[in-house]
Figure 1 (cartoon, rainbow, N blue to C red):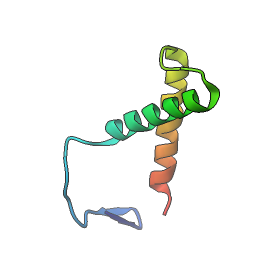
Figure 2: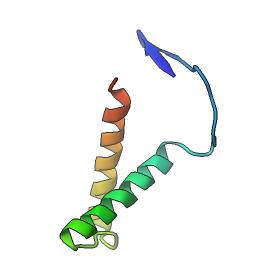
Figure 3: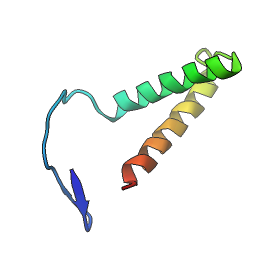
Length: 69
């Protein structure tokens, strides 16, 4: 996909169409929670508030990366 002057143009499609933004978010959240456990020895996966904050941060990071060239 390319974006020129606000116009999105699909260059090619392939892969699993059922995978998307939420799947990517979930993988990022899983990775970050596991990394935090490894580095700090604290498991945040059973803390709903911490997981909400992590998910929000992962979604924000994804949007920032998606907008970058």
